[in-house]
Image 1 (cartoon, rainbow, N blue to C red):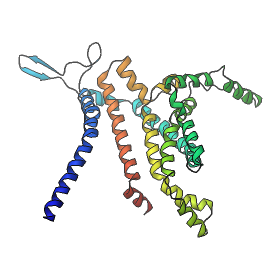
Image 2 (cartoon, helix red, strand yellow; image 1 turned 90 degrees about the vertical axis):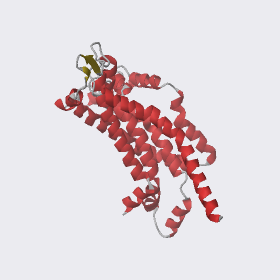
Image 3 (cartoon, rainbow, N blue to C red; image 1 turned 30 degrees about the vertical axis):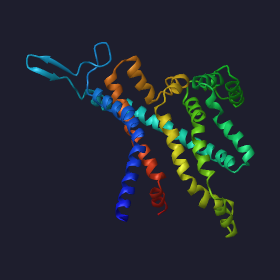
Image 4 (tube, one colour; image 1 turned 60 degrees about the vertical axis):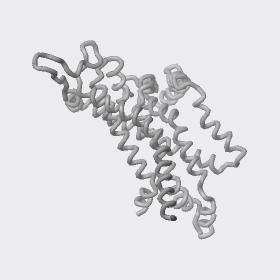
Length: 308
């Protein structure tokens, strides 16, 4: 009898897990897997006469003939411009992520260790930028970086005092990275705060009782325990930074163009959907690899392997 009840309980647990995983599984299937397969199929088709996609088959006397090609994938490797833009985008996203980690960690640590009555206010200040429109905030940075802006004027006053030529912040890589950090910094602070807030402070007390100083307590206890929060924040910052196109469009000009701008150009302006699909698939593949790596590093097994 006990075996029967145990088997029934196991079946019920398996059924509950299936039912719980069904909605997110269907969501990923409909809004990620199916569109990705459509993009994969489109990458082997010809561009239409007026843009878009040409028919993938035609009927003649011999029957149905497929009209597919590998030219779009060959085009990716015929010139190094697309690969160089991809490497450049990876570098921008990596620099943005590293700066966000350096800036977000002390902020998240301060919020996590602050008193309860101040903690909610500090979290509100972190999420406050989300209350305004994304483009409005980008346009505000355009005003800040404009040649007539106070920041540019102050910097040029300093450079002219040293006999240097005037500098322009607008339409530069600096403007793109600064704005990327500004937009994505909250996505690094919030996961880090959620991680740091759960730390057991008794571990720090025990370490101090054993003679550890503040740096040793941080490096040997707080930092290793906060790595899952860093990995989660890095994913939330790196992936959007890699494919973004609005900020390079408005602040970067020709100097700050990224792979997201090229993909948007292929779909919207050139209407070369097959090649745009190729670039999108490459970006998606890189994103999936990075997510898997971050998930592996953030898992308990990954942490133990890292310690070994």
